[in-house]
Amino acid sequence: MNDNFALTESTYYILLALYRPQHGYGIMQQVEEMSGGRIRLAAGTLYGALNAMTAKGWILQLPVEYGSRRKDYTITERGMKVLVSEVMRLRELVNNGEAVLGGELPGPEVD
Image 1 (cartoon, rainbow, N blue to C red):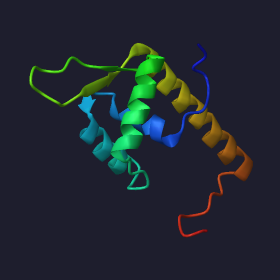
Image 2: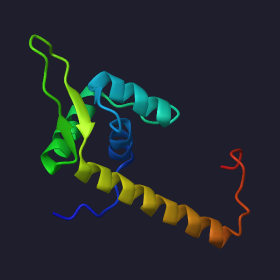
Image 3: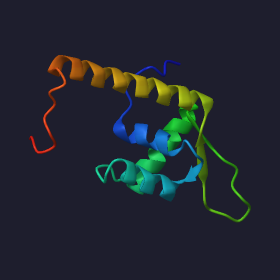
Image 4: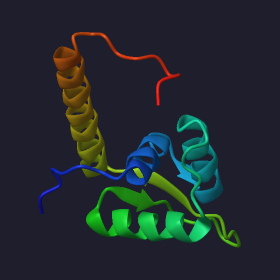
C-alpha cells in the first residue's frame, strides 16, 4: 500500500493529536486548538476518519477498560512515517514558495 500522498488538513491534525494517546473528545479539542479554531471536527467526521486511519494501519485503538465507553487511540509506526512524510512535503512547499517570492511575504492583513 502506498502511503505517499497529500493528507487532508483534518487527517494531518488528527495524526498530530495522536502523537500521544488520546480519546475522541480530546482529539477534537486539540485539533481545534492547533488549527487556531479553523478546524472543528464533528463527532461523525472524527470517528469516520479514525475508522479509516485504523483500517490503513496508521492508528490503533487501545484496549477499552471494562465498563468504559471511552475509546483511546494512538499513532502507529506506519502512521508516524505518513505524518513525517507529510511534514517534509509541507516544508518543501513552504521553502519553494519563499524562494519564489524572495522572502517578501505579505503580512496577515493582506487578503
